[in-house]
Image 1: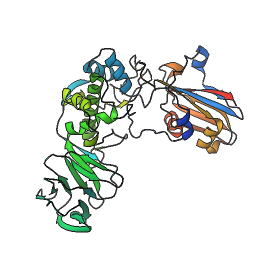
Image 2: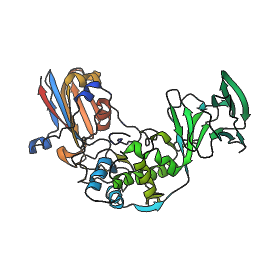
Image 3: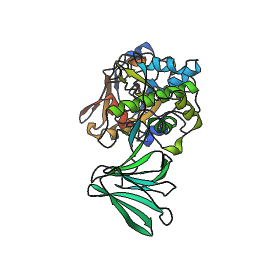
Image 4: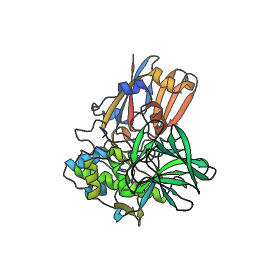
Length: 404
């Protein structure tokens, strides 16, 4: 189980990319800004400077704050009120069926699994299935044979057992199957498919509710308040249903990383998150009769950010700042050299400017654009680009510059 929520972004989540930033980040609360600091948008940078970046929140801020959901639950809100707060103008609906998930860690072009009882291979071309014999096989593998699929077992070396029409999948009467990837072994419910014609990907096809069992505890601590975990279950189920209607590729609908929502298979399941999934079984949020795009992130910092949908509104979030949220406010201290290494074209950094804030909260809210003025050139980047380049937790930040 993770110690904190995953900050969910699409298409990509920034990870800590620089040791200097990671070392400098603290969970300390930032002091309230003075009226003059609220309006400041330009900072002169001395030849040798220490640049402190104070910020709020973790992630893009669209939709539900995961720390905010826990804060709301601690304030007594139940799941319906939590999701209504973060996704206004949505309605309740239901969804079932299966979901097709790309297993991104398995990039070798084959699907290798450990043998188990009731393991079988099924041809997606003919629909025919064959039980796989137990005994001497140490592993089973699916690889492309042109547009068909070669089935082989490992006993010493690899031995071809059968070639089946079209693409194929392993399944075991709904029991988890252990997938062997180049880096790890992990169990997955449902079927493990080899798809993509002559260039294969590994795809897990399983019921939506089983899929959530491998998502919810990866996105929020399963030990948190039941209402918060239930809200995450509703958001994750809805997000998967939306993605199913807007698939990433012909062979799969959603991925298993922070580019979509994190999915860890059967090995990460937790009793608390399983209970939340059962308590909200099949429940999703809809807008005008269709699944909503229920984005979420770790922390709003006190204001959610406007997104691409009418129900992803910018609004003050009174629940995000509870005492257990270490990323409601944060601070990073760098030197001018750190910024110059991130943007070498500027030469020696002379001035920092921010513009295009969204107008919500301290310092005028999230940053739209950062301008770095240097001795060689001036570089203008979006707030998101600046955030990702320096590994910042969000685009809601301001600067404090001092000589060192």
